[in-house]
Length: 140
Image (cartoon, rainbow, N blue to C red; front, side, top):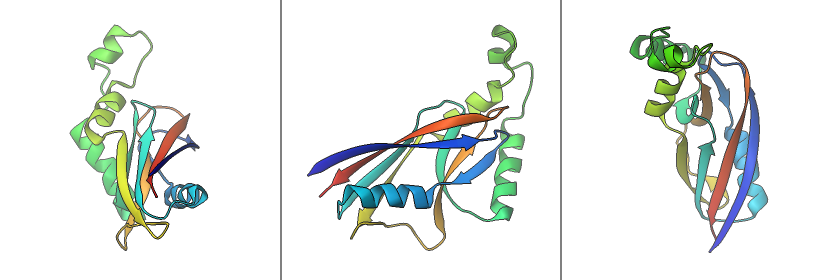
């Protein structure tokens, strides 16, 4: 059994934008030369998440609409009120619900994703940011 750790950096625009990282995760997995096990994808931020979706324009639009209905931007969020100049209280709340990590099994050096499953970063923040992800691969 071996553990390999690497990072991925993604430039994001905020506002519920989606960035597909499936190919980057697969490439990093291949570099480990491990054949089977699990890969954990963890984003080191509280206003962004990683998730698996069918990555197509309709789902991207629906995902943004869902979050705007569930947790709308509002200057009255206490994070904004208590921290002068902050406007991203809703971004933190969305990140809390969606989560910061995924674990995906792999076999024969390939992630065992379904036909339409893609790994994406969803950025909830109110401005552009660089996002750092940690990939930890456990396997043999």
